[in-house]
Length: 367
Image (cartoon, rainbow, N blue to C red):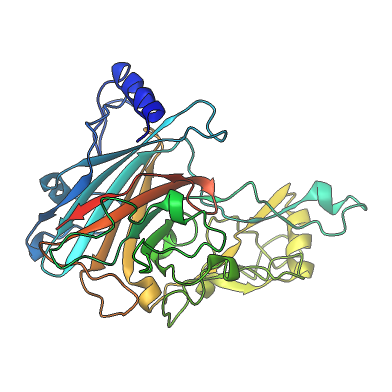
């Protein structure tokens, strides 16, 4: 951490007091900033004590060692030099690693690239396509970047220096991420709007360029996709909408509008303008929202072997997300976690963005 960041953090410490990882008596209480650390210690538990991955932490997490990461973005994107904090607990049994994270976020954002239709645009002859995708609506997210190249003595060759450093690797021209020994970085990417509803986080291998595949197809092996875009480049309308009840008593329409945050494949039908638009007018709706992605509960393959679930506390304005993955998935594109080893890990969070934005300095994940 450079001198400017250190001064900012120390100043923040002087004016703040207490944080708890999962609970807080009041959302007005300022957080305690823990002493800086360069490692996350994994606590071992019995397999029968494993936490449920549902975004609502079980008591077993109290057995873990709480680590807090601190980031101060001093760029022009953060004129207030705001301090970002992420609290992390890591557990492991003989088969799985479990990670819980918690961080503050003033808004819950889950409607990534949703479609919007409104009567004003519909009645405006100067607007040829009344449907529009709202790029101001994106999603909250968090990512982990792992150095998969531990040395023979059990320590990551990169962790003490560059490691899986998002600031140094994410911003490369082609977004191909390697550590300084030339080994590809493995990563997990939880998205509040796109992957959370299916109980997964994307498992990414960054050897491939993200520029050539902005929906992350083909990075890790996949059998069944967890989501598909609800649009095509040449189409100015959604491709799918929700299934509806075909009988509406007292009206001459057979369509009911559903304004849901998510759209699952089993609940979807092909978009038909001659049904939806007349129904919206008949129901005197000012606007309709259709999710930008169609989700599937059948996601499988290496890309989907990380279980993850989040919850947002509207009072405390805080996300909590739980992760679970096998120590060894058996997939060549996944990092293998071994007992008594340590690995470089970096974390990045995003607030209503497509990609993570605030990165934290890499630390050691110590098993």
